Length: 446
Ligand code: 5AD
Ligand code: SF4
Image 1 (cartoon, rainbow, N blue to C red):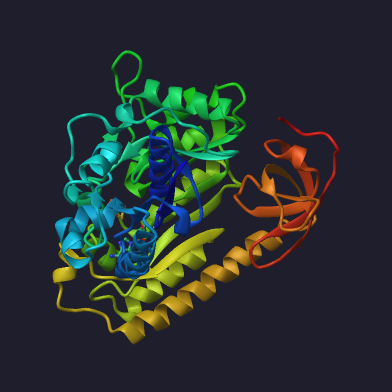
Image 2: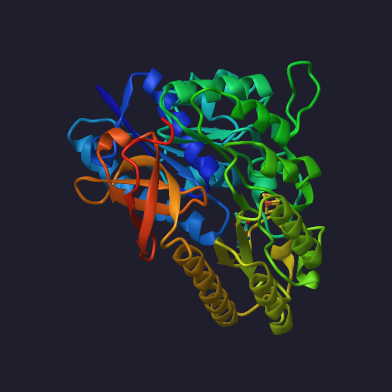
């Protein structure tokens, strides 16, 4: 049987797209493999968000070239596909730089992969179009997404933050219709999913068509999805502060199954930097937003993204970011050094912050955020939490799952608990996981 190896870089949407490409190749008779040496088709689903992420692709392609040569000598063909956002941004340049690549395909046209692979037998191909047909309609039905599955409901971004490539690589904001999302969610649940995370670059700007053609908000969509029998938990990510509508905030207090966790990137705590970033909100607006969400759902865990060293960022600006973090308190966060990206307005600026200053600020911010993350996890010790069991644990006899606040937990229980909700008393924490004991032999729900 032919085999396909798909490697995903970057965000959850890429993880979703990778799963869909694996489904598509599955329909074409390719079995999925995690051993690249035995793959007849290798897909790198790439990320362009920061320079480091994009560079990884070229070093991986160097290794693949050697592999392709070796397999070729043994009489085996290997098709190499570069998909995702580097493909979209760099297109034909990738072919010119890396002779081993056969297909370059962007995030909006990967449903054409089988056809592109067939064409690549004659000539190397690039497809970075934004086609008129709906990619999702053209994809085969979902096979399985595991106990906790991602589901793309919205794609693209119209916000044009000054540092970000997403509006260029993923295109304009598009929402999928409610019916298509419900059908996909139903299939996921039938395949064993108990938690679904609705994903989009700007998921809270969702405005897909409802049954009567009238646009539905994310809160409306979540109400419909949460009614699916068998679905125990619902999450969504990633949100923009300016699209946090009143009905979405209220939904956090109303929808059973919507988990108390909100990823709400703020990027900076300085009004001056936020303005230069074209974020279109200030730091106090963010603080007030957090207060409103907490008023509805006091136990909500907050998470965010931060960029340090945006062009022109001063020590005083950075101090404002530290102050915002101290004020809000985050259960988890991602933080990055600013990376200039070709084609974005910020990359044109002459007032870059020196690398050493960026590194210093990142270390200080991460120390603060890490302290908050550990304190949040440590506060769970002694408490009983509900854990959705996702997979076998690190040691025999153990299973691993997540709390409502997205904390990983390991505990002793048979593998038959996978896919069920269990009550666990938390006994200890380590750097990345909680440890505990089951308090009831029966599941809360299955
Ligand atoms: N440099 C550094 N970080 C970036 N992000 C987006 N673009 C850049 C960039 N040019 C970060 C933002 C965003 C997250 C997905 O990646 O924090 O929220
Ligand atoms: Fe990028 Fe800003 Fe759009 Fe997020 S909101 S994807 S950071 S442009």
